Image (cartoon, rainbow, N blue to C red; front, top):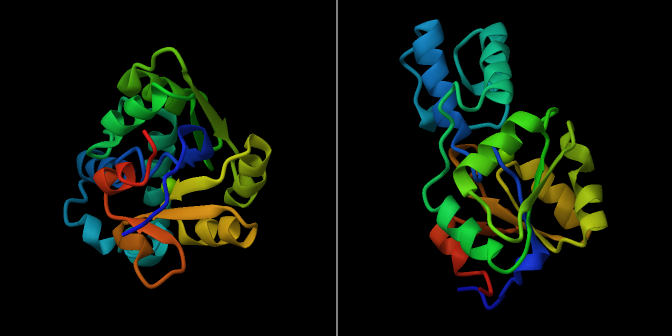
Length: 192
Ligand SMILES: [Mg+2]
């Protein structure tokens, strides 16, 4: 389908919704801590949860805060296939993650635990804001970024870099970007 072959040093990754199955943790905390058991991942049709979920905004904030600070406590899991592909890439280059999370340490520890990275290691940059991801990517010399947030994909595309949308219920619709349905498809784009 695509002729491109992305070199390991040319690509970086968003974390939540791409490497981490953050929405499943969200649903789990909603159920376990707040007794909200009627939510389904398919209901999350926009990136902004308060717009698509019928629950109180304060509860959404509280759940997100737990996910940001305690990935192990909320039993954050990797998305299927992510660990294998990332470890394969890591044989060739350091892994680079650029997240809009405001704090780095908890998610960095989580990545270390799931990836058990070897020689080339990994780097996490927590920007705190979506809008500055593209600047960071340019500084790092990244050409391809895997992301689930469409507005960020657009901003990256507008600056001449290549966005790859990681398919999720909240990023549907026609876009000019490459789109992958899962990590196996993403693997097919990599020159490893
Ligand atoms: Mg994300």
